[in-house]
Image (cartoon, rainbow, N blue to C red; front, side, top):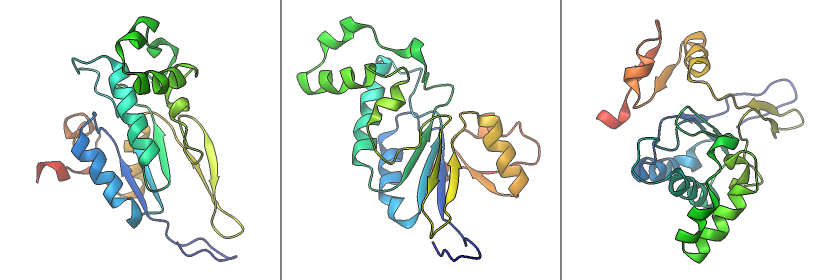
Length: 182
């Protein structure tokens, strides 16, 4: 990223959504991280239709976020339930291995489970952070709504890359690509 006093030139952002606990997609994002100034996952990290309890997915996301090699912004989607209602019942903790139990307890000490991911550089739901860029910086705010993501892409004339083309295809004027279908 080239930053000068007069202007901030192109910041490379990889904007993803709808990973639905697909390990291959999480691995791909980690492998691609060094090519971008920021990787933003805009919702639906979990899979609400999984047969496993949500806590399982939360722990997988925590493990991935802890080892992620770059700057990371996450916001929840409708499959993530990042509110107090998603706090797992205490009896589920007894079913976990000791290491997972400690990680789960950490997640459960926060009102929103994503706040418990524990990365110092994480920009979670509804927060703003000033990303360093010379003396000025760039403000990033994560907003957990697919319609805002689509509207932003339409306003910029950008192409939204998603595997969730069924949902996003309803947005008039939005250009879509599904790289997972290739």
